Image 1 (cartoon, rainbow, N blue to C red):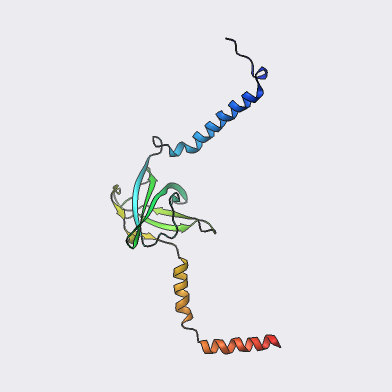
Image 2 (cartoon, rainbow, N blue to C red):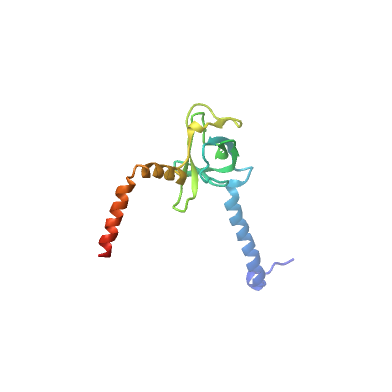
Length: 170
C-alpha cells in the first residue's frame, strides 16, 4: 500500500485529524498533574470556626504557589471540617497552620498553608481550630460597627444634622 503525500490528501480530513491530535495533546498536558498515577498528593483535614465562603476546588497555596486544593467542606456541629490535598513533597506537621485568604476583589478565596512542627500528619489527624483562621467577615464588621454606633450621642448628631440641613437650604 502506497501512502499519498499530504498535499494530495483531502485537506479537510488532514485538518480534522490534525486538530484532534493537537486537542488530545493539549488536554493531556493540562490534566497531567491531576492524573492519579502521576499526581502524588496526601489528604488532610482541618477544623475552622467559619468557612468564610471557601469551596471545593479552591486552591491551597504555600508561599503563593499552588500546592493542592480543597476537596470537601462540610458542617460539623458548630465548626467546619475542611478536607484538602497537598503535594507529597509538602510536609504538613502537627503545628501547621491554615489561613483562609481573599484572592481577589470579587471575593475568590484560597487557603494559605504554613507547614510546621515535627512529623507528618496522618490521614485521620485533624489540624485543630486553634491553628486555623478565617478572613475578616462582613458579620464581624457589622458587629464592630454596632458597638461603635452605640457610643454616638444621638441628640448631638440630630442637632448637627438639622444645622447642616438649615445651612444647605440657605
